Image 1: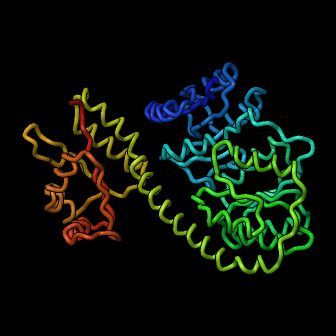
Image 2: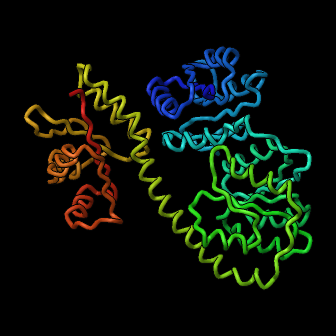
Image 3: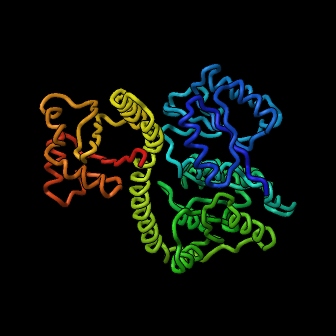
Amino acid sequence: MTPAAIMIVEDNAITRRTMRRHLETDGFFVLEAPDGKTALELAAERCPALILVDLHLPDIDGQVLLTRLRAMPCVRSSPIVAVTGLFPEQIRGATEFTDILTKPVEPGHLLRVIKSLLVPTSVEPASPRVRRRALVAEDDRVQRKVLRLHLGLWGFEVTEAANGAEALRLARASPPDVIVSDLLMPEIDGLSLCLAVRGDPTLASVPVVLVTSYHIDETDHTLVARSGAIAVVSRSHDMAELGEVLQRIAREEPVPAQQGTRQRSTRDDIHRLVGHMKREEGVLGALAENQAAVSSLLPFFERFSDLASHSDIDSTVDALLAGYLDASGAARGCAFLATPSGALTLRSQLGYRGPVASELPSFFGRLDLLERVLAQGTVLEVRSDDLAADDLAVLLGRAGVSYLMLVPLAIGS
């Protein structure tokens, strides 16, 4: 099977190389364009399945390039994703892009977005008997768009709702043939939406399928069934499980309404399950935050490795440190280099002033901590909200910060 072609339109060679490495590692075929002219030529010649566009190109504005790409028949329907340092609300015409990624882009998030937007063409379209009107309830904008793309490919006319309350209002105004809902949402979660649907005489026979990114055990599957949902499926890049459930629904009789007593008996259990999901969401969110912080350093690592052949170490370290602080949004930073004897010396710093800056050469009395991180070769994060050691709390206090990231970098051998 030929891998999907992804075109990266980015004038920064380091950023292109980093993104290309991650995409190729995951099995994608990557095309590179350093400017708009090359992008238009490659698009006409190779018809990429998805295009990543930097908004600030040397020869053309990213949004002008989007308009020209959309005028090309071979990529008119391909997802085109903006990659920018701006926030979506700062971008003129942001809604014209399939999605927007804000720099620095965490590699795992980049892959998830691309896989979600590349709807496989091998999915069998829905048969004429499949219910054609689907209501999607999903609070995440990207995931809502993903569900819409899949359902549209399978032959459904899709109505979207940003939460359970809006979904219930839309369903009552115009009952759909099937409801596909996220399990965990604000206002009304997926299970509560099921109960409300089952309790409404006009909606009681409408099948409801729940979608989740979290682990569901047998007890939870039983609870979902008792709430009146047809099934709960795991979110995936191809949503194959959802497609199978919808095909099964098309072959079966309409779902009978659930008994009211059974609905009421599940409410306490629903609160338990939703509470469990929210706790898991919090844990996963913290892990993702840590991973994003570390992953955002990758372009910095690659540029730093070029120092092995650079003659002016000090000016290069200054430029690299400034570039990383700008990309990551960090307020201040410093770089130490190890001498041939193994001693650490301060070579660059940005953002530190006054008495705090005077303590930098000794790293606030904790050069031993830098030596340990360098010896172990692993990133160390020091946070004020989860410190167990008093000496680390003192370090943050002397540095005047609530968070530090210590990153060891090896150059050459």
